[in-house]
Amino acid sequence: MQFIPQSIPDVFVIEPKVHGDHRGYFIETFRQDMLEEALGYKVNFVQDNESKSSKGVLRGLHFQLAPHAQSKLVRVIDGRVLDVAVDIRRGSPTFGQHVAVELSGENKKQMFVPRGFAHGFIVLTETATFAYKVDNYYSPECDRGLAFDDAELNIDWLLAKDSLSLSEKDTKQPSLAELETCFDYKVNYYD
Image (cartoon, rainbow, N blue to C red):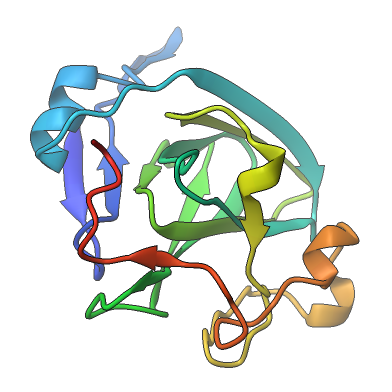
């Protein structure tokens, strides 16, 4: 596996080694030891999630507050998505900036989204199966979101806004400027 730091150094794209021949392929999709070595800290994933969505479905931007903040290790099993992580750690030199990476069943790339980031994705193919690990359980009282179309974030979701399919919740999220609670860049949320 290759761990590639992104424009925000705390976010990594992971490219697994694909072993393929006429029978198909084999990949290791997760190695705890290699991930922790690349990150420089321990992550303990506690749950795997999977969703299937149609073209134009945009899920996000979501995050959970401490003490239930979550890191995510995301990948696409089938189809293609644009995956986005937004830095919402006040005081961070990259606060409000984002990383956007195309993940697909074909390229097998994964993205590690650390605590302190809002996360979302949009489906670019007819359907996509999206899978991810989290290091904390879902907590309704800590569940928060950020407006996907906040002009300050300047995210190009690659599809026309009128073709998007969103949950009611995702149409009512605050902008970055309106966000009352964020993370603090100087706090270690992994202790």
